[in-house]
Length: 567
Image 1 (cartoon, rainbow, N blue to C red):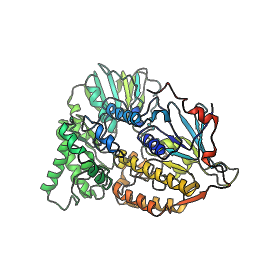
Image 2: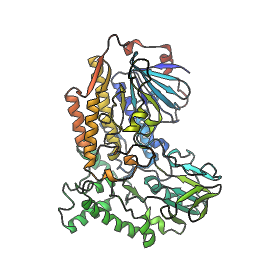
Image 3: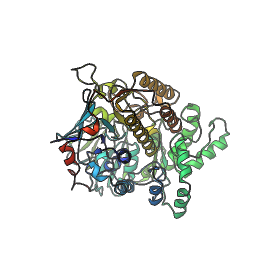
Image 4: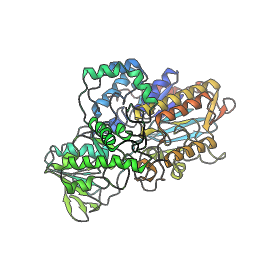
């Protein structure tokens, strides 16, 4: 156990944490990254299940801050798989010499703000404490799996896996009776892979998802030249777009065109294979139910064609929610998998899952004997990871315990711009609630946030600020704007992890900003140009020592304490 002092602590070594470290070092900050995993990669380290693949095209799902990096890396597929994305992040870490700044297998448990010393103390599972005046939480929006509360889950004597913590050595499905619980994006990717070798696959579906064919393919040299030659323009257009990626779709209503034009546009994008393009095929698909119905009708018909069996199709075609208000997935052969003799759909709406037994699963209608159960049951998204940590901000008055982020967000997931929270000074959140986050290309959304945070930290250091936090009024104004925007969409009526509805007791709210990446970026730039009027500032002085005066022997020894555990 020890106390290690830095100017900046970053939690999480995924995309956000790595970029935050790059920016911090360019600013001359002494920064450290704390990561609970045994290697870097974040989401793409943990989610290594068979079929794991991104649903944003590779050329978009990558860093844009360095033109040399863009030009040197060669993506091999239209939609990169987990191994390739993880290899890319390893390349980034090596290229910028980041590994010596990352403390692996360091499980953060708490963070407490000291109002007298004006610094955060971050506590870890092994008893170490990392102390710094500034703290960036880059813990990811899909990093806390939702474990279902199923009676008997600990009694099963076969193999039990969670898709978000997949064994590094892999899993052998061959000849086994396998149940995959969940048919969201993850289940849609696992089920076809398991079906290739398993003796029997039971796809256990509660709520059907909309999924489009990925039409994934190898990228050619011509593809590389076309994109790399136009990268500056592509990135500029992505920043100004709604979803953070170039979509090349109509900027008009689905109801303003003829049925033939509408069908042709849907068919064009469907045959290309892109959920982002399809969801923005027309400008009113998420705001007008009649317009959305035209898209649903088209996709419903395609699902029925792909499944083949009318009875199964009737069960896997979604109903009761608008297309794209739950995650719009992409797949490779998912619906066609139901044509296989070794695949059985279990519709949990017709036969609810009652319990997991020693030998399998019991539904309201039958006992299913199994060798393996895979939990593809999703995440406590966006706020889940931070709600589970003991994060305490400024105390209401001297001698009292600091404000709990968990308790605050259990009432409402409020923030200022999705980046800071009133009552939590010098705490920055990457892609927090109230930002585009999961409704956009996450790589761009992360870059957008890290750059804003980095610029804000630099501005604060230049001004001599010891403490910054958003005012209650600024936070409330942003929350009101986010809700006003979401109330004008179909998302507000959906029951999904987008609104926190998949976690019992979680407050119901649209967790992402739906105004678009471009307008959001404009809002960030406006805040910067105005000198950050939403912030309250406390200058250095008698409140506490400056960061550069707080060196320690522990800090000097900390530099190499993680040698030998890097992969």
